[in-house]
Length: 233
Figure 1 (cartoon, rainbow, N blue to C red):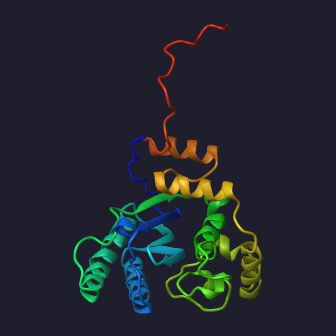
Figure 2 (cartoon, one colour):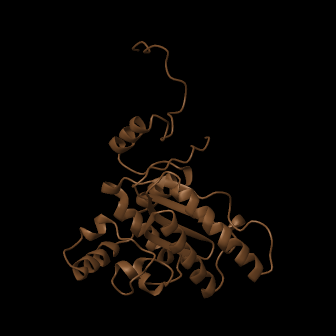
Figure 3 (cartoon, rainbow, N blue to C red):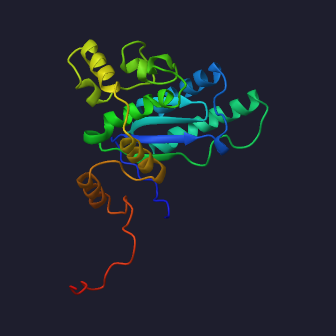
């Protein structure tokens, strides 16, 4: 199936993934993660993109972000590449591309999938067996949401603020929300939409989105449509 053109809607959350070329490492040392986060914060600020959640894994990264313009995500990721890739190549005496093509993104239905997607991103190190507790992984936004360490990269979404009237209430609610592991079905739904560039949401959300966008944003049904209604058997 052909890949759908990237669809970005201003002021709506998007799930983004950028992978290392041929699954190679894109972060090797603490300094690499730290440098990337500095440039991520600067790039997001320059192009008016709100970063709601993130995780930096050794060979890929996830972001949950809302751009204020249609071009904001691409501009932010391009700036990141211009700064980080030459620095990384010089440090490790390598040449060539670091990332596997262009980043992939999925527009998120906030009402039904924002919190689920945030958990999917921040619990990645636990699922991969790198840590037993998400708080033990320093390169994600989970410590920020759990109230352990404020993160200047993060702009909290309204749905996070709605978890409680005080910081303590919000943090406790988010920790409790993150305790259950995602089901296999939830994992498949999120990853499939992301890797194929489909919106992630209810059928009503996707239908409404396609009508407003006046372009295809969901996969077409397979097979040729009937020219006429088939006769009943």
